[in-house]
Every structure is written in C-alpha cells, then in structure tokens.
Image 1 (cartoon, helix red, strand yellow):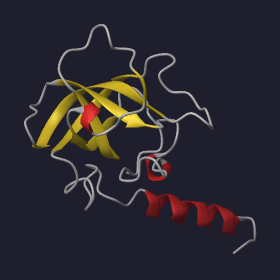
Image 2 (cartoon, helix red, strand yellow):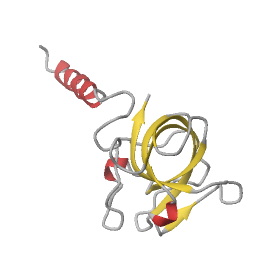
Image 3 (cartoon, helix red, strand yellow):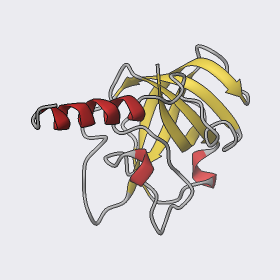
Length: 153
C-alpha cells in the first residue's frame, strides 16, 4: 500500500467507527436520564442564541417539534422549548464544574436536524444561571432542561 493511502484509510475507518452508533440516537444514557425522553426536530437557531464566550456560561433556549415521545408527558407534534447549557460546545464537552450531569454525542446545533434528548422540566428547577431566550415574549408552557442530547436520523 502506498504511504499516501494510509491517512485516507485511517480517516475512513475513524469515520465509520464514529458513525456506527444507533441512527435513532438511542444509547444507555439518553434512555435512562431525565424524566422525559423525546426525538425532536430543531426548528431554528435564532440569531444571537448561540455564541462563544470563554468566561460566560449560559443556556440557550431552542425551539423543537417532537417527532416521537419515548418517555414522559409529551406527544408527537408538541412544540417544546429546550435549554442547552453552553450550546457552542459539543455536548460531550459541555459539562463543567458548575453543571456536571449533562452530555451527549451532538456536536453542533443546526436547524432541521433531529435530536434524541433526555429532558427535565421545568427548566428553572434544574438550572439557575444566564439564559438566552429569544422566545421569551412568545413561548408558552414550561421550558425543558436538556440533560442528554444525541444526534438522530
């Protein structure tokens, strides 16, 4: 095998291994954490909702439509608002000394993508800190706290 093919083969193997998990976003963490578990489509990422500030930790409220309810009181078609801590970080690296018990395999938030999430509600019983909520004047119902967020298809 020629030397220049080795990096290509290595990249292919890593990509295959990385994407070999369940395509529905299920894993041992998302299926046992939180009191609610859903698969939901991220409807939008409002301008200014996600930004990187090294010395500022916050949760951004994002709007979803539930496509499947796995556990808890939500139903397919429900529109929910979910707080994600430090949303500019991949979920696997979002936990810190202040908020320890969150995670997942989602790397970035993009509108139109499905996420499988373990949630708690109401948000203010699980997180008290800075919140960027572009829906403050228009949303109804309780906010949800994202405990675990995985990519789903």
